[in-house]
Image (cartoon, rainbow, N blue to C red):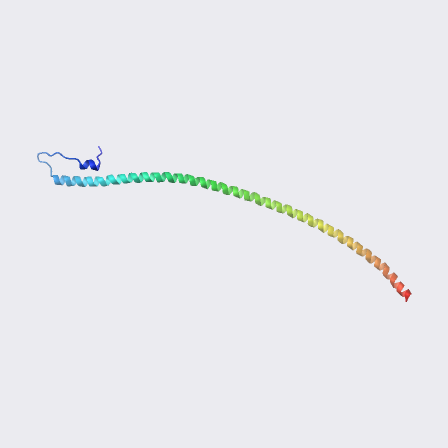
Length: 147
């Protein structure tokens, strides 16, 4: 049978013929009740503390689940961002290569055009030089005859 400290305070003992030393028994009973009350309060405090800790534990477990979910989401988002950045960088490199090929083709075409133009100008200059060489001896003989 479990008794509370309040119930112990109200316990009364029957006296026999010789009785008991009431002061000593009452003192011992008071000390036992006080000690029991302390233990009873501690037990109640500990029960409250356990209830609070269980509530905290439940809240922390929910928070842990939320943090795990957030972490998984962040990892997934980071992976998606890395993949998108990789695809974008590959596209940029591909476009740069295409532009480089285009510039190279235009430069080669311009080089070919300039080579053809320089050959044409060289041909014209040789032709003009040939004409000058033919005219120069004739002009020299005409000056000699005129003199």
